[in-house]
Amino acid sequence: MKKFLILLTSLVLVFSVSFANSGNEKPMDKKIAVAFAKTFASAHSISWTESVAYTQADFQINGQYLSAYFTPDGQMAGVSRNLTSQELPLTLIADLKKNYTGYWITELFEYAGHGSDTYYVTLENADKKMILMSNSSSFVLYKKLVK
Image 1 (spheres, one colour):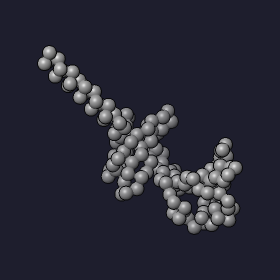
Image 2 (cartoon, helix red, strand yellow):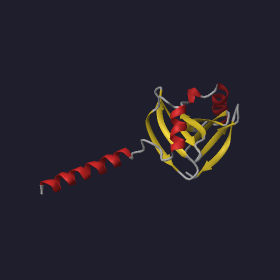
Image 3 (cartoon, one colour):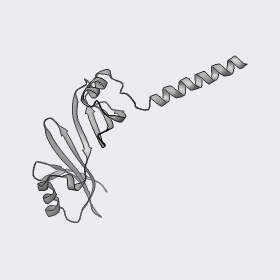
């Protein structure tokens, strides 16, 4: 009986440790893990999300939260970070103030990929919700959302 309890306790510990470690500490694909470690060596608090099209790593580095996106073959597609409206380029701040009064910002992030930075902002008012995308000095409608 004593051996049975020790065996049962050991099995419970092994399974609980394996489930705890599967809490998105490492991606499934080794190519992606190597590419991530090479680019973001000092990253911590890493969590992984996988889909058919890409693998997403959410992590913290230098006090900032980032998300990196990798293709199935291990190539980094881009990196995004949340922003405050004061972190936008001045031309984009001016565009929002001029053309979108009466809306509030519910989400704002920068996506760096393919050699350029693109800013996305989600705006809402009482009746509408939309996502805008920057095209250098101004925003254009990216997507209308049902409220």
